Image (cartoon, rainbow, N blue to C red):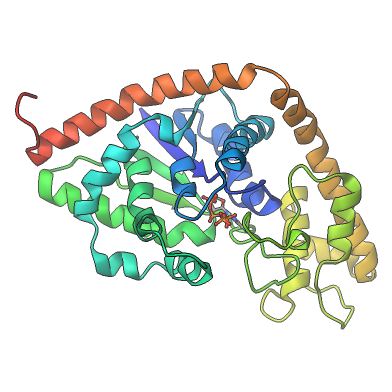
Length: 332
Ligand code: AQP
């Protein structure tokens, strides 16, 4: 069975960055890869790498599951589950710790960035996060992993770990390839176009949540930081803020930034921003309606139970086979 794996941390409400960088890519891949099975998980164990409020975390897990389904994943083709409910993920993490080197983990830019922001102690799990992530992917022998640009380095490490294991024990893991969207690999913050749009950014103006109302969406886009020259031009190096908005527009309309510039070349920023706000709101409206319905029904329990059962069977077998390859245990 050919597989594709993806996960998102329930570390806050989803925004259009995660949507355009990951979820939408995932949904598109389901259409273009009908012969693949998709393992899609809520990475709740990863969320513990930074402090979490347990009540909020529980809520975020449910909300993320509902949003995944609302965004249009094909449930016939997908096992949707919560990572911590399949303990094989933790087991694989422990086993793979012995195949990752300190120097490799020290080089991870996400670790360095997030460690810098910590006000309390830096958790060991933040440091070893990429190993858990490698386990998440290798457990299901993923051929592809759809990710945003920020996860590329972690995926490179997953490939290194897989190759290291394969070298030691013989061909055992599929070495996964990243699938990074061309246009929306890194959707930037609306307030600071040098930073990516992030779930955990406390500045609400920096992002558009998938649950935001039309009025809020328009307000956020209106207040997005651009520049003062007033010329609609696509140049991610010199006009970062505006180019970010053009990319979002192009991605949602399935067109190119050049085409967007052509359409708005006579317009001012305000007109362009109004049109973008309208497009985002229109795109999110049906997703929001499905999300509300799912949050108020029992459907998710059945979906997550089924996803867990399917994924767990494979995951347990893979861990058991790996332990055997490594010479662990006595009877099996
Ligand atoms: N701004 C973004 N642009 C493009 N892709 C993005 N992704 C996240 N933000 C953007 C992609 O979404 C997937 C899920 O990310 P994650 O939840 O595992 O963690 P993250 O990359 O650390 O995302 P956040 O929003 O920044 O979360 P916090 O704030 O908790 O760290 C990944 O494929 C990611 O690339």
